[in-house]
Structure formats: structure tokens, C-alpha cells
Image 1 (spheres, rainbow, N blue to C red):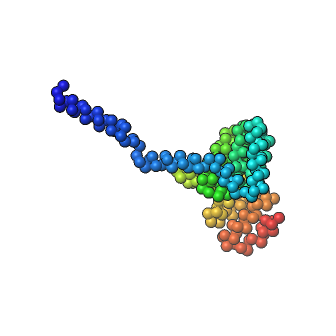
Image 2 (cartoon, one colour):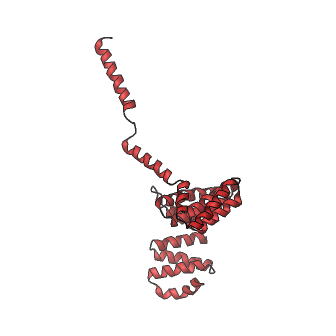
Image 3 (cartoon, one colour):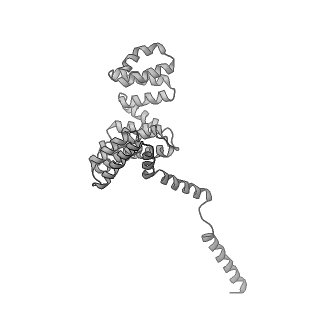
Length: 257
């Protein structure tokens, strides 16, 4: 080789080294997104949610929970009764993320349909009552996972699918914001007399101001199950929203009962 060839090879090696080691191969925006995701994951850890929940309690109630948590940690990790008890206590003070967390621990041990359903519906309460977006996201992700587990164990139980649809409606995925309502509409199409589906669609119609659809679905529930007290209270809202106030008196007394 002559001198010029050595120089050319040397320059090529230097450029290759700069490309491989001098620059991160990922775009800057992607790195920022990944960093943000990692930080969000840390911020939604159960330890942080636990700390925030305890900090928000009155001193005597906080001490009560700290003793419960400590007692449970000293026992066998498969202490189902202790986990159920602590889940119930967190539910009682409306800390649904933590109630769901301990209910999920029970489901992991019991590995049955009912336990996963309880965990999912408990977390679902957290979606609607969370005090922060990170807590809401935490509850939504875990509710969906738990309800999918319940469905996998018993695909024929339509109630699990209804609850999953409600979760998606309460926390719509960015890539498919209509997923929840699509699940419920499909269930209604395949099972037109399934009352939990009709009730869920009725509630969603009220939330979105679709009064005629709400009334149609809720009145069908009355025909199928006239002893259902909840449906009359929803009908009061639907009649008020539609301006059909003359019909409220017919259902108001049954709602109060």
C-alpha cells in the first residue's frame, strides 16, 4: 500500500469509531421518552403509593395500618386471610389502589376466577376515584390485567367482560379510545338481555349526554328486572337530561327506596 491508501484507511477507521462510540444511536427524542417512562414507572411504584396513602391518614388511623402491615410482613407471605383483611381495610378508607394491590396478592395465591375479578373491580374503583394521574394509570393497568385473567379462567362469564369494557371506557387507550364502548356494544349485540351490559351502556350514555339511548337501554332493564332499584335512579338522571321531567315522578319513588 502507498501512503495515500494508509491515510484513507485511517480516516475510515476514525469515522467508524465516531459513529459507533461517539454518538448514541438512538434519537434524542426517543431517549427523552424512555427516560420519562422509566421515571413514571418509578413514580407509580406501590411503595410510593403506600407512602402517600399513609401520609394522608390521621395519626391514629395511620398507626392502625402500619401495625397491620407490619404484622402481615411477619407472617407467611401466603396468609390469605391477612391479605383479604388488609385489602378490606384499605377499601374502607377509599384507598382503592392499595385495596386492589392486596386483593391482587390474594388472586396470585388463589389463582381463581373470583379472586381475579375482585382484584380487577377493586382497582377499577381506583380509576374513578384516584387523586392523581399516576395513581389512575396504576389502577387502570392492573385492573385490566386482573380482569383479563378472570376472563381467561372463565370466558363464559359475561360480567368480567362488562367490567373490562367499563375499565377501557374509564381509561381509554390512546391508540383505540373507543375500545371500551366497542366491547360493550358487541356484548349487547350478542346478549341483548344481559342486564349488566345494558346498565353499563345506560350509564355511559348518560355521561355522554345521549339521553335517548340511555332511556332506551334503562327502560329495557326495567322490563327485564323491575326490582332493580339502581335502574330507576339512573332513569331519573336520563329523564332530567332529556327534558322529560313529567316522567320523573313515575320512577323517583322507586329510586328512593
